[in-house]
Image (cartoon, rainbow, N blue to C red; front, side, top):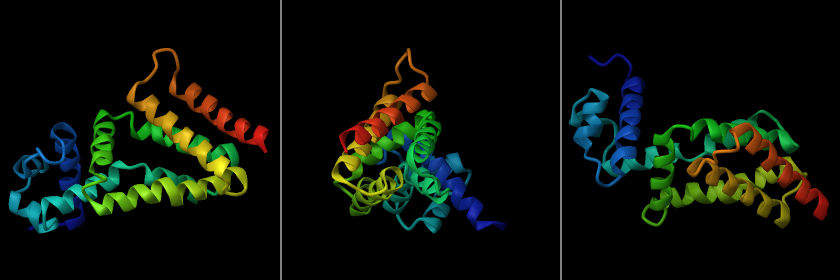
Length: 185
């Protein structure tokens, strides 16, 4: 008998993340996810009514939303919230499987409206919240600067430069964003 349903569900999600990162969302067979989780294929479908439902759950988790939410919940302002987001981003996407899932998730946006909503939340709502914490209000210039910030983080995790460590990169990126917006006011 299953003692903790949450543990089994999380084991399935963790296994799906590993398998999806290797094979992609569409080529990954559910039987491999079940094998990786140490459960039957039927149990995977007990927790997730369809492969689509499992894909959406894994795709949501691959996005940096929880990093931004965590930093916002800390009540940080100014450059401190950007440093928090930058460090969280570097930590999460240090894992090659997470990087792979992020790219696979970005490719899903046109196929799944749930992922489109999550991406909109990230690039609109969360970006506005962060802009208010960083700059005191959400302006076009601030939102553009934050999009550049997130683009810089993405570029770093996809093609880590040989001559810049994570901390130096985040610090310089934060300085550029903060100083550029301050100087343009």
